[in-house]
Amino acid sequence: MPAPKKIGIILLWGCVTLAARAYAGGGGHTACSQNGRPGPDSLIHLLIGRLETQQVKVDGFYYQGTFPTLRAWAATPATLKGDNSIFYTGLVVWTLQKLEPQLQGEDKIRCDSIIARGVRSYIHYRNRKGGPSYNFWPTDKPVFFPQSLVLDKFKDSKQIADDMDDTGILYLGKEWKKGDTAVARLKTLMDAYACGSLGPDGKTRRAMNTYKQFRDLPAYSSWLGAKTPVEFDAGVFCNMMTFVLTAGLPLNQHDSATIQFLQYVLRMKAYWTDPAFVSPYYPTRAVLIYHYARFLDKFPLDSLTSMRPQLCQDARKLLASSTSIMERIVLKTSLMRLGDTVSERPELAIFSADKVERERYKFYIANISSLFPHWIRRMFLHSPVCIYRFYSPAYNDVLLLEYLVLARQGSPGGRKPVTQW
Image (cartoon, rainbow, N blue to C red; front, side):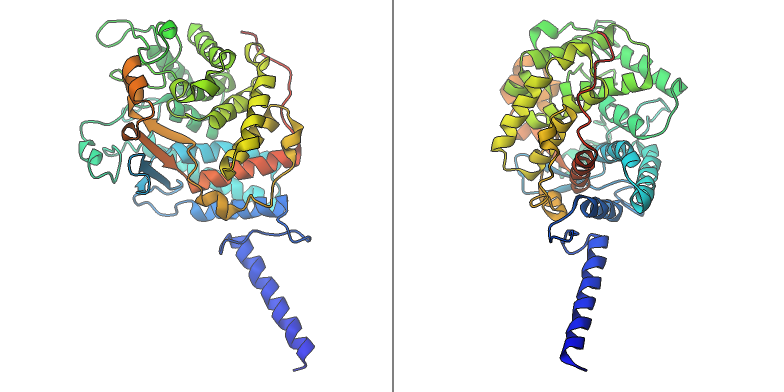
């Protein structure tokens, strides 16, 4: 066979092989555009393929339709444990639901399938007694820090209560109609566990683990449990109010108080000076800015939108010094949602799927100290003994996917306020 013909066959075989690997998301390669650099559309296609691959196909430790979560005790950060919580799966599904209308063709079909499989897994996390809420861990059997050498032994006596963050996220990711009876029951449940409601001992619930001036603020609580203390979290509150307003639920003093706390965190810049205290579960500046930006993009409330320039300025300040790939993605997405068009140019040279999945990004944590009164919280707020970090390669992929899709469609921020408070 003539040499040129052999070379042509070898090149053709190489192109076919690379294309197949890029489609499957394998081998750490990113799909490329004609100039040799990854193009937004090809990277979007690749990320959806990688999500499909990571989604669990058969029930086991992880349930079918979920995405694996990894957990690390901050005192031994190198040791990772599998964790079958629903939190990151809920975030993946909710985010994909928002992005799906912007996708086309095969990507849209595959995205729909991922969402449907994810929603079907929610049944394993619903309230044990048939209530409208959901739990962080499976409820069909006792679970408490699974695969932990010590804490797992307490699963029969220390199961956690249902929480509003997981519940709101799961509802936002699945289809339901306004006026749904389960949603109405959930609002009643939220009111019942808010600060100022009566506890099982007949005493008024107080938020003893927040700032003194807010201990009697009738805001919602992160937890939906009779024995769990009232807990305020600015990131959780952003998600809760997104659910309440999306559902069109009747608003009351608890909603106003919750917005009041969110307003205080912005006005006093506590998201910058005291992030771990105002948000036990989303304790970093970048992630808190992301939560505010996501909420304000959908519901630009009059009482909060005046803080957009401040949030943009602080996000840019963080972006200028950040070396974390995931933090840069989160900040640039936040800036787009806040109406900053400068952030629409994708940094595709560094945003590869492999790099994103490998980074242990501290998007969400559990801090045991948050369940204790103010002075104990302050003492152990940053203690690694009290902190557990949760990671999800699939959610890292989704955060990159969200950034790419928003950058392609243009900045979604800058809407006019629609709700008065």
